Amino acid sequence: MNLFGLFLKLPLMSKIKIAGIIVIILLGVAVWLQQKRIVAIRQERDRYQLNNDALLSDMRQWQIDSATMATDVKRLLMSSDEFEYYRAEDVAKIKQMGIKIKNLESAAKHQLEVNAPIAAQIRDSIIIRDTVPVVIKSVSMNTPYLKLAGTIENESLVGSIHLPVTLRQAVWVEYKRRWLFWKKVKAVHQTITSDNPHVEITYSEYIHIAK
Image 1 (cartoon, helix red, strand yellow):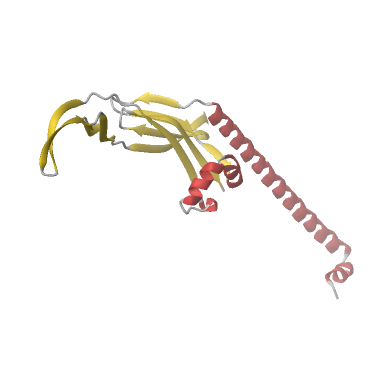
Image 2 (cartoon, rainbow, N blue to C red; image 1 turned 90 degrees about the vertical axis):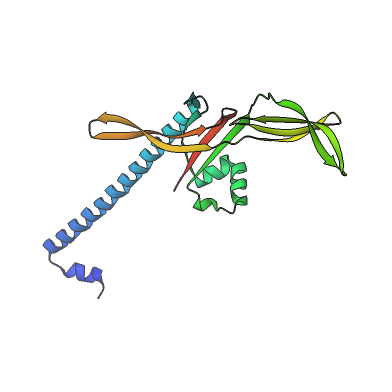
């Protein structure tokens, strides 16, 4: 005998109780699904607001000390599909690194410019060429932030320039407080510093991949 047959043989009060339990369960499932949908809508709304704020905010720069410049940008939040669509060139480079996009947590990109004034000394130097001493012009510049060395021959300068630079990155959260014990994420920032005054960060972005 199936369950429906057993149900029909039950007393009326038992049928009413079982029907009531089923209705309560169905209502509970409906409320849970509706709540889940509301949470998803709110999360998408918050993501849109944060991304809109990040896109409308200018990149902020300030001088920390005589050598260090800081750059601050707000985080963008994208899904894997959005990242592959809007940042196709970056995706191609990341894949060349052997990284799978599905395993990607976040991606950052920075553009740098080097603008360094040259004030080098030119002096006579002697080199041995085919056992014969030859006088040439040498150029040199040595500072904590730029090293230049080269020679001048046949009206041409041949040499090398070395600019050591360290980039430091910090990702931090900016909160918006409404009550004493309640706070909401207003923005996630990426702040980068360059310790070489000749190296300028002209563009920076930080994208977190939403799972």
